[in-house]
Length: 263
Image 1 (tube, helix red, strand yellow):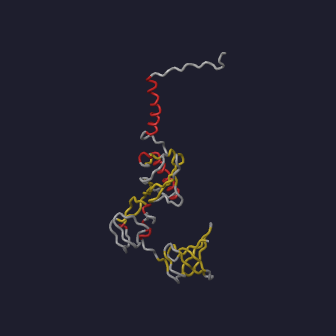
Image 2: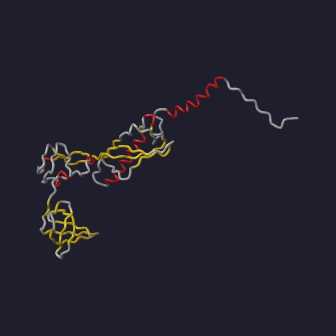
Image 3: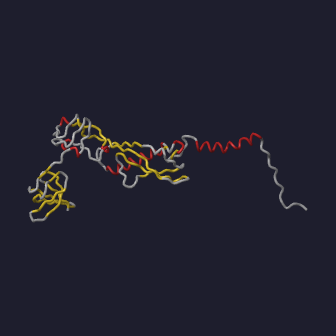
């Protein structure tokens, strides 16, 4: 009785050279995936102890610059931003990851010594770590020409313009001479130190009981009147004043015998 199955086509036997070449195909693919320098962009190279690739480092720097620019605003001249990327903790044991996304953690300030988050989105294990970075903002500012002790009344020869790191301290640096000349140092400065706002003694604009000018400001208008200070008027600080009608207001001491009140 004839068979109902179609005859099988005879399989051509492989030569010894063909058989010996097959395993190399798998090995070559594995070597390609593990070769140094092949790590995909936006990944972490775990073969180097959780080292960042050049592409991911550049992405971290870009994110830091954009966050700093958004925080700093449109100040002219625009400071020169320098981002120094640190290293991940060498004790971290991270699973290989093909896609790592950097992000600014909530509450992190993109100035000075801070941290950028790294989140693994494509890998055998999802992980989230923080990376130390230092963000410097270089801009011209006033620096001391020599050692200046506390109590020095600043003159033109005491200061010179130089490029300083604005983000080195949270205290704003002073870049305009009229804001510094004639002021008294509250602390000593070394040669080359940037002059910061807190380095200057707070000016007293008036005393309690003095007659002051009250300037009330609102959207598109300002009203000026006289009143009496109920406390000392220290530069940039809140103080209370009484108007001629007897109303008590709280404002900011901004100049000699002047208080600004926002309505």
